[in-house]
Length: 180
Image 1 (tube, rainbow, N blue to C red):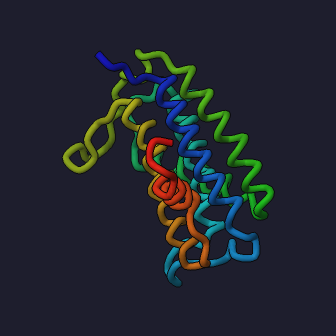
Image 2 (tube, rainbow, N blue to C red):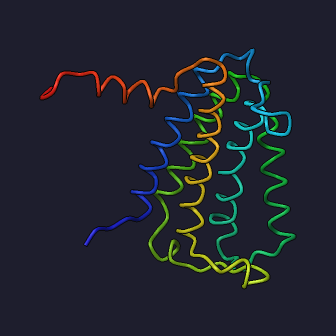
């Protein structure tokens, strides 16, 4: 049987963060204010949002790990703190450094979680619309959330005339002679 626990989740998260960092490096700082449309986050705001997301999950599933019910007020407090934290990084260099350090910190946190913790169920108000989830499912959502926003940043790269690195890598593989 295949197994996927904290160590595997951490490795997978590291891959996602590595790809996010590549994009953050490739977009010129003078384009960090670019928005795909006027009602979307800028490049900087998107990266700040990604940065904050790991912090509140680490708090909920780490120091607040005894909490098995998250109220709307709790959620608001967690995400407001995360947004404030992310917004404190205002330059490309600061964002990249924080993405690197916070990414490693979060991955190490994921590796440290025992199966029993990952299996704990966290519930929410209005269970018909917000069903209970295991901590594992919520933490997997951090990776999915980052991938979602990274895809948005890849569209922005296209708007700026930058071919995303994952596309360049695929094109290189396709152009390589067969059997190599």
